[in-house]
Each structure stands twice: as C-alpha cells, then as structure tokens.
Image (cartoon, rainbow, N blue to C red; front, side, top):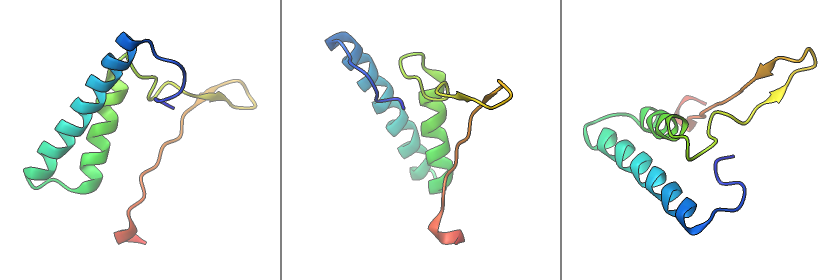
Amino acid sequence: GAAQGYFSEKGRQNYEKVMVEACRRAAELLNAGGTCIDAVKLAIEVMEDDPTTNAGNGSNLTLDGTVECDASIMSGQDM
C-alpha cells in the first residue's frame, strides 16, 4: 500500500504533503455537498496521481501473467 516502506525525512515530508492534499480536496468536495463515496474516490485519485505514493501501482500478476488491479469502496448505506 501507499504507506509501506521506509521514508527519509524528505520522503516523509513529501508523503505528508500528498496526504494533506488528498484530505483537503476530499473535505472541499464534502463541504460543497458531495457524497462520502465521491470524497473517497477523489482522495484516492489524488494519491494515485502523485508519484510520491505507490497508490494504484501495487499489483500482482494473474496466472496468465497479466497485471490486474482490484479496488473497492463499500457503503453501509447500500447494504
């Protein structure tokens, strides 16, 4: 996941900036009337779009050798 591994102090600072930005963008969306699910999606997109994290890159090969990523968001409201 995005939090695995060792970070130097500079790496930690960069990582923290990405996390703050993800939270800020999600909070803005919520404050504008967006849904929780949309806020989670946006925060994930911010992390995936920044090379500081490996969000969206951690994959395993399938038995036939192709890369496959799975992601999910669960809403208790829809259960």
